[in-house]
Amino acid sequence: MTSTDIGIDLGTASILVYAKGKGIVLKEPSVVAYDKDTNKIRAVGEEARMMIGRTPGNIVAVRPLRQGVISDFEVTEKMLKYFISKAMGRKAFRKPRISICVPSGVTAVEKKAVEEATYQAGAREVAIIEEPIAAAIGAGIDITRPFGNMIVDIGGGTTDVAVISLGGTVVATSIKVAGDNFDDAIMRYVRKKHNLMIGEPTAEDVKVKIGSVYPMPQPKVMEIKGRNTITGLPKTVALTSEEIREALKDATSQIMETIHSVLEKTPPELAADVADRGIVLTGGGALLGGLEQLIEEETGINTVVAEEPTLAVAIGTGEYMELMSKMDKTL
Ligand SMILES: Nc1ncnc2c1ncn2[C@@H]1O[C@H](COP(=O)(O)OP(=O)(O)OP(=O)(O)O)[C@@H](O)[C@H]1O
Image 1: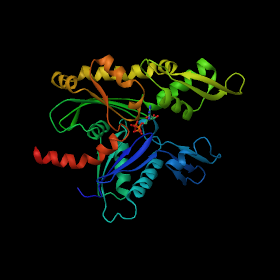
Image 2: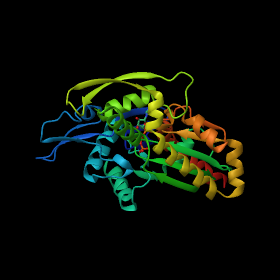
Image 3: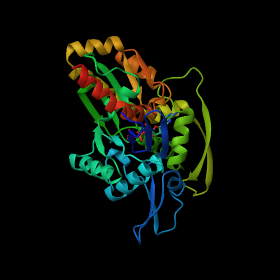
Image 4: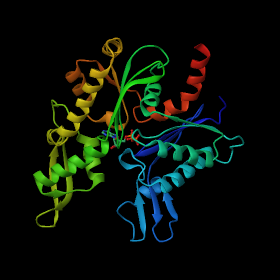
């Protein structure tokens, strides 16, 4: 593997690029701002994110991969090309081999299109990788051995639950309940309970700062500002982590049901391995307060959050090609 090989985590919330020997070289939100009239891209990544909700009529800022499905392919392609050339810089003498992880749930046609866009962006070889496999490698699990490992990757748009052995997924399910739904659920709860309208960034902030899905000995409190839905005037409300637990109940129980159903479908030998080796959580959603404890309590299986949950997919994608060529040699 040469130093020009890179791995890309094409996530619904953020894009990360990992270069062998350098680590994460780029991390930006998967947002594109473009001019509706001319179809020209005005900004990509962080710069475009700042424009969400603040653009004049003709400029739209979109998250083209929202909900784990490539909703706007043309924009995705442009965004991908922009990030690849930004990550490679001017010093790219040799075309890189690129491994790319797409959100699970994308169709075969969309995968093909991502592959094509990556070639067009200058790759000499492209490998499309399944998200749970990349997450497991990035979490430091040796997936090349014949042991069952369970990985729960909670991103922005999707939660992937998979049991992996010998470099492949044995049982896997993906649901469209993840970080974005947590934010939506908080917005709905606050509107219903407090007659307060808040935006997505505020809901995300609440989730990150005081969000918890497991009872806390000392619940946290946070003041939030929004618009009173009755008077239309600005209003401030103090929210507690207990209220957030209530707001996220439905979403977390859907994740729990998915974990249970994957465990039920797992062959007994591998299920026994999972019980011994534990469940590993990756993705930004894994950082939600108390999730680890909740999963551990409801499954009776030791659960840990990977060391760098938000980077795991990108790191695993970058290391995938080398790992697979080693595995081919030993088989
Ligand atoms: N400390 C935290 N607590 C709770 N949620 C968090 C925290 N940090 C990040 N998140 C959430 O993690 C989500 C993003 O995770 P991640 O970057 O893994 O997604 P992604 O890989 O882009 O998405 P996907 O895997 O669905 O394509 C967002 O919803 C974000 O709000």
